[in-house]
Image (cartoon, rainbow over the protein chains, first blue to last red):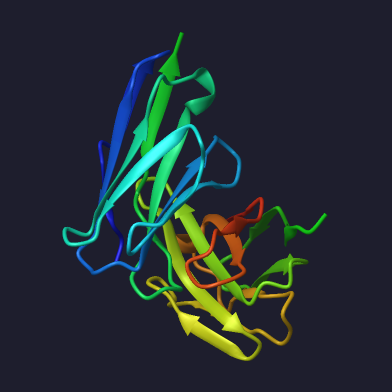
Length: 109
Length: 112
């Protein structure tokens, strides 16, 4: 049930862009994205719903290809505060959330 | 402010002992979830509940149980703790189908 994320880790300089991918073997009702800082709980970034609706962060964008069961998170002009582990959560039924193994993002000055 | 709290935050126990991790939310959310987080595995769903008296197994439910007697609480019980259950456990809740998950601060469990 776990979606697959790529890359596993990425290092960026401030101002650079990054893309994190998430794919599932199951049809999806929605995709969630969360960021987790070391030692803290995951924090919500974005939800992408079947049909195209998006809710979430105003500085981070994402796409959701329902047919391919894939989502991508786009981080543009990265800031030091973007560092953390990013998780996609896939929801095949409308109320179950299975998370990927995470993508570690490090932004350096 | 509404919140979701977990207790204890840290626990050390011995193999074979019963352990209960508490999760309490004050948002009146119907949906509650338990995850465990291990290096290399991300967050894995243990059990979830859509409301009072409703419980469901997730992908790694063996050795764990939950009960939902009211809206606010979803305690997670390890009937006979094993070293493989050493992990960080997160409780989460959401208000509605496909809604944002709110996570507790986590409970770190060590089974010796």
